[in-house]
Length: 592
Image (cartoon, rainbow, N blue to C red; front, side, top):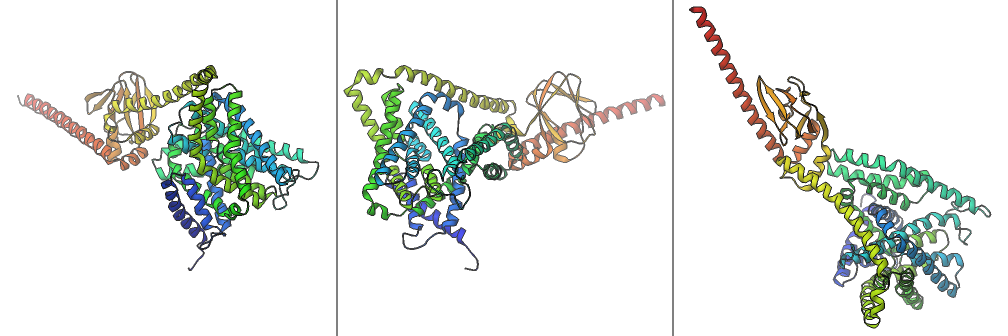
């Protein structure tokens, strides 16, 4: 080929193989993520055929990490987390500690160092948010108590892993590793200073993000949304996600993952968060696929043949040991058994953060290539077995209810009821906000039937384009002869339109000022408020952009303008006839 096409080849082959193996995995009733990992294996150096550029693939994977964490932050709900905090925060932290200790015990038996054991234990302690959400959606459990506790539990785990990613470079040499490329680790005796500086940088970033982000990011999104350009809106969402992630890493030294997570959290507070999530989802999915493909490229399948017992031991810890620890913690916190087994099944796998942490540990000499291969093998197997974990959880719950009916029906029910009430209250608030927005759109359409033909998303966008304005009785809203720069929609009140001495009153649901926008001519009438009025004003630029994308709306406005123009001409003709009659009568009087 005439030029270097490594990037194109890596993306093209990655997408093709991921789609093929993802489809095969789905046909085998396995998560598609397993297929993506297998696609990466086929692109790696351990299999014959095409071998992708590992450096290029790792950078694409980094973009996947950024978009993954951006998606986690975008759907992060502080209220939901606070509602389940008594079980999710304590349970997740306790489960991470127990799973890490189990991993350290296993690696100690293998003769690994403590530092290697800590990183390995952290890798198996955190489950995959992607796999969890997919499993909950397939079983319609997302909005149940079990689903919301499991999601809250995973959010705490994700936050803990983000903290681990930030702190690992500072403690690398202390734990027996080395600096990445000679940078980032602390010399002996100054690790606490490095830790304080790291936490100070993270704190500074969080402070800036909390104080400035919620004011700037929603403002930018609303400004861009007002342009009416969907591609520009999507581009702006991605620019904010990648820009904040890269900027935070450059300015504060935090990880891309943390910056992307906070970018999502900030954007999640915007009224346009749902639209931002919908528009960015295709790219997020695409680069997430490349992330898993790049992880698969690192996997050496021979580890299953060379170290089968080690692989089985790691899988056992993930699908049995870690869920049992989670189940015991839920019961110790005095919540029902059915909640415990549901959460335990949700955690019986590992995923994206395990890969990220393993790769970082390898960079700092705290994870061997063999350990990374064990993590990857265990991830593939645990994700494959996860549907069986949910089936086993159902059977364990049913067996316990038959064997201990009184205990299973009474234990933890009071705490569960309190939790259910709190979650229902939060869900009610969220539904109330959605209903309020829907009510505004419904009232808007009922007031102005002109916009019934456009869909709900475009109606919501139109509301963003309007600027509210009020007028008191006697206020002149529009003057004849001035340049037309906006169109007015009457929300409440009455206005009087004066065209050449002929008065016409317009009430709520009417609009005026459209002819000047359509023709470019000066205003042809005076419009005065009769009583207290509220308007929605659409600027000339927004009017042209919106009606260009909705010809039916423009046609309706054009028809109304032509009708009014005909009425104005008729009024002028009548006025001219009256004038001529008065002249003729005056002439006759003079003759006589």
